[in-house]
Image (cartoon, rainbow, N blue to C red):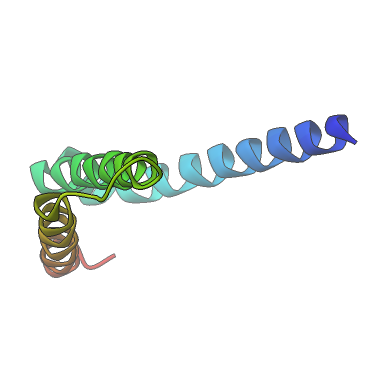
Length: 92
């Protein structure tokens, strides 16, 4: 059973990589991949992922501090604004 899950995980990762490569070759001529907004939005996604993982880890042991929730909310709002700015600047 575990080899089926491992094979499915490998296939999914291969499919994601293939799709990301196609998307990157599609976006390269537009200049989006060199945009600082694009890289900043990717960094904010990583920050959001780290905060959510921190919340999931801390939630079992103690209550989550309110400033972490405020930070998560601020990052989500910033990501929505950046998404709108990227769609306005690079309408692909």
